[in-house]
Image (tube, rainbow, N blue to C red; front, side, top):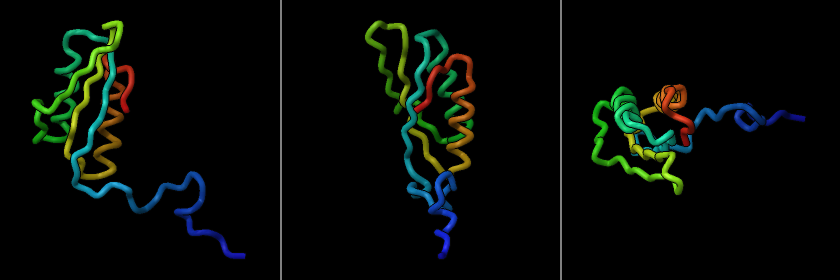
Length: 99
């Protein structure tokens, strides 16, 4: 009996990607609605995408007004870049969730 290719095994990362790089890639960041959240997210976005256009940021306040959703759209150039961007955003003290 032959074994399936390693890319078909559960838990094994695919060698190929469902994303064609480079591409525009939206990321939603949520945190407490505090001064500096949008600025912090913008600085991180520019760190990974120097051409990031802050005018494309979309904001959405929670129903109770305590949280803010910040959607950024970056130019993704690789899986590694996106992984590092997610890791940097999710470890920022102002950020609660990154989707």
